[in-house]
Image (cartoon, rainbow, N blue to C red; front, side, top):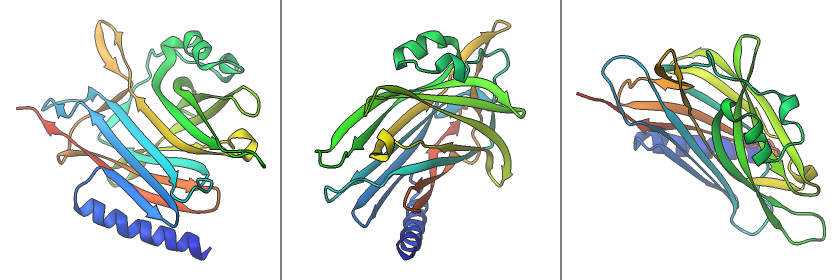
Length: 255
């Protein structure tokens, strides 16, 4: 408990220093673990009026500095800038049933029109008595049927150890009213390799455009306020530690 409090306290101090420098990348070096996170939004230039489709990219890395097993991520949560909206009208959906047991390639082929994000993940697996093994997988985010009126997403990955299998993680996009933030996403992370693995990389880009009524529309949309778009992230680990951080991506309104 004391270690958890210390990590959280030190993380808050680092957060304040980074925020003062108007950075949009965070890096924590606590105990023997380095955790880094970045977020960025494209485009950086927005029209003076109205929302435009955007791509939101995030990268999270977890590294052990002394050769021991990395901390195991248990949840990733984001509060996302409320100066925009999620649009799923007319966008095809994919279901857990369609994705069950599929490889990344098969999943993307089966529900190609429902893809709203792609990326990749890596993990370190340490079975008892064996050398550490690195595994990796493509990540795919699919638009899913709404849950309780909320936009829903299914994250698809593929695990190769101890046996090959599809890993499906459903989550919803909640509408919130919390200062600058208007949306919240909580992504619970399942155990990797039956609990013997820990994520070392999670990167994804969320964004999609399509035609509706002859007009180009986007899944994620935003406008620029105050010269930045902002995301608050919280990384929670299996040992009870958690690291909060506010990340900003610069933007400006075109003349």
